[in-house]
Length: 382
Image (cartoon, rainbow, N blue to C red):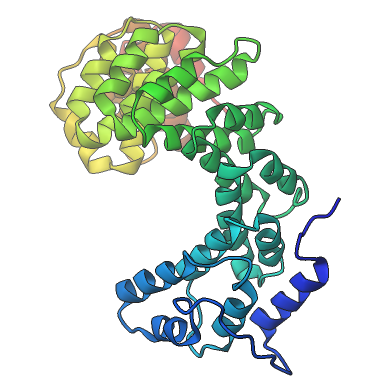
C-alpha cells in the first residue's frame, strides 16, 4: 500500500526543510503570482494579528500540489515563525489535495505540535474521505494522542453530515472512558446544529447495546442542558423512567442549578417520585454544595422543608459532621421522612462518637432515637 503519493523520501525532505532548515537551499520559483514570496513574507511580517491571519489564510487557499514545496520553503526561510493557528490553516489547506502527505508531515512534527497538527488533518480528511481517514487512525493506535485524533475524526464526520460513520466508529469500540468521551464529542457537535438531530440520534441508538444507548442519551441530555436547556428538560422529562434515560435528569438539573437553582429543583421534584428522583436531588445538591457552597447553603436555608428535598437536607447534614456535629443534627431534624431522618441521625451519631464519645452520649440521652439506633452509634468503630 502506497501511503504517501509524493513519496516517503519527499516527505522526509519536506520535514527536514521545514523543521531543521536546509544546509544547501535550492531556490524554487513561485508558480502563482498571488502566492508569491513577497506576499507570503509580507503576510508573516504583519504585526496586526487579525490582518496577518486574514492574509495568510487567503494565501493558503491557493495552496496546491504545484506550489506546496515552494510555499514550505518560503515559510521555513521566513524569520517570522508560524503560530499554532497558522499551522492548523496550513495543514487544513494541504489536506484538501494531499491528506496522506499532510498527515505524514504532521507525524514528523515536534512533540509539542504533532498532536494538533495531525488533528487538523484528520478533521479535514474525515469530511472528504472517512474510510481513508479511519485507516490512517489505525496507524497511530496506542499513542499518547490517539484520542485527540479520534475526537477530530468524529467531529469531522458530524460536520459533513456523516453521523452514521461517526456512530459506527464509537460503536466499534469497547465500553470505556475513551468511548464515552467520543460520544460526548458527537453530542456536542450535533447540539451546535440544533436539537432535532441530537435527539434523533439518541433515540435511534440500538437496543442491542443498552450501555452505549444509555451513554448516548446521558451525553445528549448533558449537552442539551448546556446549549438548549428548556428543550433538553422537556425531552428528558418525556423519556423519564425509560431504561436509556436512566441518570439523565440529574445531569440536566446539575447544569440548571448553576443559573437558577429554584427552577432546577422545582423541575426535578416535579418528576415522578422514586429512587432515581431521590438520588438526583441528593447528587445535584451535594455537587452544588461542593462547587458553590455559599450559594447552595443560602438556597437551602431559604427553602421550606419538604419530603422531595429530604436528600438535599441529608447531604447538607452530612457535610457538617466533622466540623459541627450539632449543626449537622439540626439539619437532619429537618428531614421529613422519619426513616430517612433516623438513618441520617445514626450516621451522624456514629461519626460524632468517634470524635467525642462523651458529647455523643449526652446527646443520645435526649435524642429520642430508637434503642436500636442508639446501640448502632455506641458500637461504632474506626
